Each structure stands twice: as structure tokens, then as C-alpha cells.
Length: 240
Image (cartoon, rainbow, N blue to C red):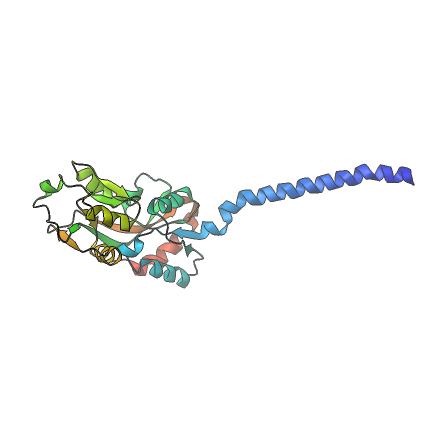
């Protein structure tokens, strides 16, 4: 009997070893596929500051998704550059609102061709400051913008005296108050929101904006199976 027990021990150990290998392989497999099919994949990136550019867009998009049974949720507000990076990497479904110039070098992001808003970016100075008299004068003024928001780049390129780039709206206001920058860009809505948040008042310069463009939702190419459904859901939100 002892001999039979000894003969069974290697078989039992081999069975346990095979079971352990199977369990480890199963665990590793689940770890590999979880980034592709996990909950993070069903999030649409939303950047901090969207509420200043388009206060109702996030809720409107969320309602449109619910109405069309699209199981994609919106992320918490993210720093603009991180929002775009997560969308470009495919870890998130896409980015809720970008203008074409912001994604022109990101081949992985596909535009859903429903214009969700029109951006008119005006030049703003603090109320106690004087506006530059001409656009040529503006070239000798220093702009300040937010990191990750590409519409500021036109002002950066326009300037002959450099620019400042900061990570928050409050710091942006401080740069202007401390005379470390001369002006910023923004929509009318953004200016009002910035005034309320930072406790500063602005003066709008020139009779036309520096730049006018449209904003679109961008979808990562790995998630194009959602393209038509998202396009149909967003169609009622298109600006005319």
C-alpha cells in the first residue's frame, strides 16, 4: 500500500503543477486583455476648461449617448494634454472636443464630422490695460496660454517676444496681473468664466477675433465600431 501511495505522489504533484500553470496563464491573459476591454476603454476624455469654452457640451453629449444606448461615459476633467494623450493612445474611446489643428498630427484620432461648436478666439487684456492699437503692435506683446490647448499656439507663433504657458486658469490670471504676460486668447464665454473664477475683469481687443474654427468629437481608430452610432447621436447637437 505504501508503494502505491508513493507512486501516486508524483502524479498528484504533476496535476497540481499543471493546475497552477493553468491558473497563472489565465491570470496573465486576463491582465493582458483587461486594458483593451476594461471600463477605461468605454470612457471619453474630457479636459479641464471645457466648461469655460462650452458650459453645456458635456451634459448634452452624455444625454445623447444615453438616448442612443451608447455605453460610453465621460471622464472626470483631466489636464488638457493628458486628455489628448489618453485619447491618442486608445486607452480612452476618444476626446470630447478638439479643433482640427490640435489633432492634425495624430493619425489615430478620427473626426466625427458633426460640428459641436464654433470657436471665436478673441484677444483679451486686463480691464485696466490698454489694447494694442494694431495687429502689428500685438506682435510685440507677450501672450499667455494653457498647456495642452492648441488654439493658443497661433498667438505664440504670432508673437515676436515669446510667450508663457501655464497649467491652470488661476495661474494664467496671475501672470497677467503680475505683468509677466500681456494678453490671452479666449471665447466670450471663456472670458466671463475666467473673470468669475479669478476675480479679474477683461477688455476685448480688435474688431475681429484672432482665430475662428469649429470643434468636433474625435474617436480613436480602434473604436470605429462606435463611429456611426456616435455620429447619429451627435447630429441633433450640430451647430448651424
